[in-house]
Length: 81
Image (tube, rainbow, N blue to C red; front, side, top):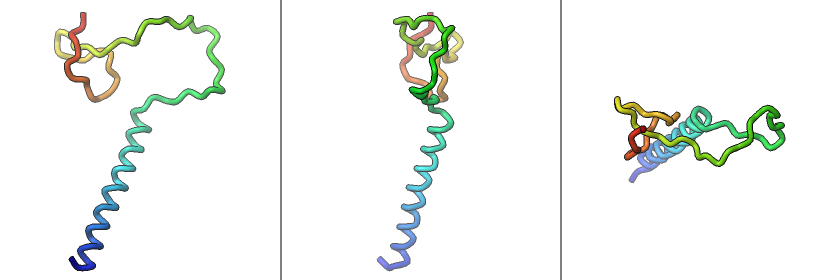
């Protein structure tokens, strides 16, 4: 292996690492839910929290997904009632 080949390989590896970091940062900013800070005051007119779980993703009769805000879809989700 010559020095020029090592330089090209190192440059490609560094480029892949940087691209991965940039894309991860973009996805986190674009799709992650905003973080609520502890110092933010709670709304006073909100109802009391319930013990109901969040709605799960399901497949409608026409094949569309319900209750799933993300672009990817979980496999083997149940049919909607």
